[in-house]
Image 1 (cartoon, rainbow, N blue to C red):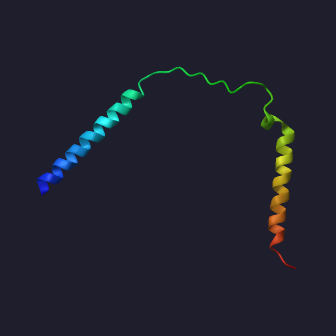
Image 2 (spheres, rainbow, N blue to C red):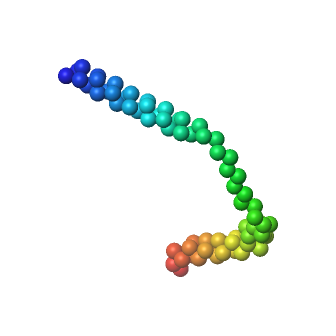
Length: 72
């Protein structure tokens, strides 16, 4: 019974090592992919007014949440 368990474990380890080596060889293909995300200089989040409006909305929400729980 113990020999059968050892054989199954060795077979499983062999299969795992073979699959890992196949995966490693599959990644050897050096494809040169050039991704250019800078299409224009119209990045909305680089504009200062976006950060000012976002900060104001965040402060208003924070005040509303903190004030909403207090009862006087």
